[in-house]
Length: 335
Image 1 (tube, rainbow, N blue to C red):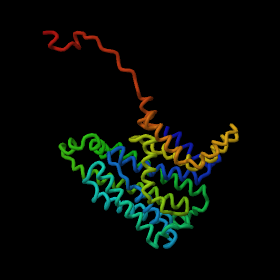
Image 2: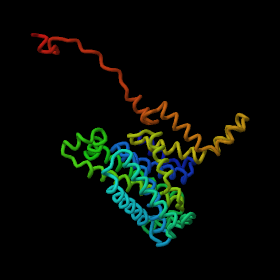
Image 3: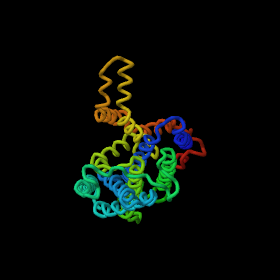
Image 4: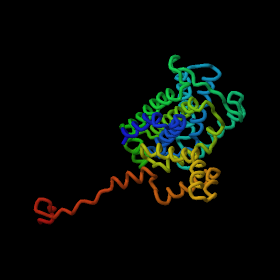
């Protein structure tokens, strides 16, 4: 499945897909995968991930536009800024649990939002516009959409492979143990606060990489990416795609971003096909349609799209009962 997905992504520009749109989906998919690493495998619900996504975007955009640095340096600075911000927020919030942890992350993220709103470095309400793509390593021009597409695809694939490695490593197994039963993990000798902090920083760094890459692709950064609604959007992507699955957040990001960008065209096509003008209004009701899909997923697909699919494909009939023979009969039965 992964090979087919990678082959499809490699061939997408050659088959007529718009590279910038696919890259936008991949950036948000990486953002959702980073968030899923925290909530799906560690059990921590953060309402402040927009701070890492948008904050890193501002840092990367400022480095490219104002300082004139190369794209790889801008991506590294944005990722490092997100990781540092994640460490700071994690130190303040990680010792709280449940709704208290979520509210602390939300409050800290909103502090960053108001800083970006008032700071002249971010452009305020206008944001950063006209961010140049530059040349990778000073040689490879990213002005060509296809060149940028394959460079960004390589970065996303490498980040996704890192997430898969983290999940399947002994560290990832400890995170699952903390999610399932933190007191038991503590009784086994693990410093759960340290492991949760490290998971929070890793998730923040990967979310920051996604935000930095989005700035390079789109060429601008606005307050939308640091607003609390962006944290809600990534939660929606993760839940719709499948919480605790590797590929689920990618599917959820594809569904949500496609609805936001293509719903108007779909509605117009349906209106022309059926003659009903009601469908033409779909483009103005993206939030409503997204909410309906979320409700349907919660009611009918409790595990998300991919979670439900994996569950159904992995379901097997129980083995038939083994008859009690002399070899399998318990000792007390012989007595």
